[in-house]
Length: 220
Length: 241
Figure 1 (cartoon, each protein chain N blue to C red):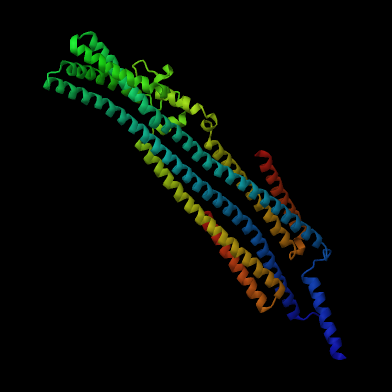
Figure 2 (cartoon, helix red, strand yellow):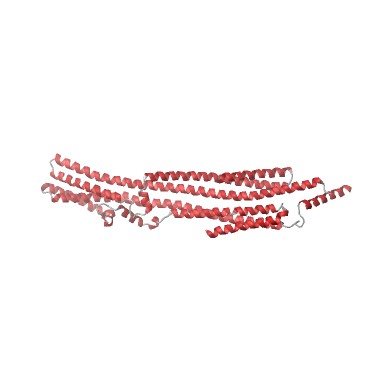
């Protein structure tokens, strides 16, 4: 004859084993899911950080080179204007001191100023033109609107990197909870169907649940 | 004595009960080896996939890092060439162009003048000529006819292209290509880690096969199928990339 309490004890023991087995399997699956999320988030954060750094380097080059081209164009026009101002000054001095030589030089320089202005305008127009490689041409011809758009994109990449880093942190926290859950499940397996074993198993379930929640949060 | 007999009877009763409740007829003791094998193989496959995914992911990071370094190198090279042309060569060429233009106008004006005015124009033209003679040897931009525009100015585009072509390795730097390569490797790493999910599912089935003895064979077979799917997917990802 079998004692009723013996049969009940064995059923509870079997249920305990089943819960522990399900928990171990769930830990394995959650570990795989969290690994996927962690690696994906890590890569996203890494790429966004590097992209933002690349854009910062590109912005720096564009600002410096396009500024150089703008300064050069302005400098060339200033040089032509200086010739024109010198021509006017010579003509005035020639008239003032009744020096036909100075007046003639001033008139010739005035004519040279107009010609030089046209030559230098044509020179500036070749900045960034063919056959310069497209990258350098892009640096030379960068407009303020393009720079503003690039700054926006750079900021966006920084935000993406921060968001991905947060997801990665959640995934790592989830993996930590899973490790704890695994340890508690092992403890429960040692303590078996005792009060301590049941507490350890319950805590392991709780930790695995928290890891699952973190996996969902990290994925979103 | 009686107590010992009763105790022995109670232990035997528990054993009989265990046999009735836990182990179905015909399956007692079988399948432990299968569970252990499935779990071991699943663990090994998961470790191999995880290791390979980590290597590929690291390779993606390396490509991205190289893309950043290449970007910095490319921009520094371009900035150097632009500065050389616009800050070192152009000012000298500009002064020569000024002198040439003024000299030409002075000589043209001298043709129409006489006396002191002509003498002053010729003298001033000589001054400009001296400047041209002094500066020309140091300016390739002003003396190379390839860079002369029909209007009299300089073709800065052509001059810069020639300057850049002196270091073709720096011109051909392409960080976009490296970044794209990194993206592909990152995608491959993600796909590889996804194959861990069926592999871990096989571990779940293997673990469940231990207490669920009645369905142990079915669970072990399903676990083996899940493990096979995970391994085949991982091989497919490797072969495709």
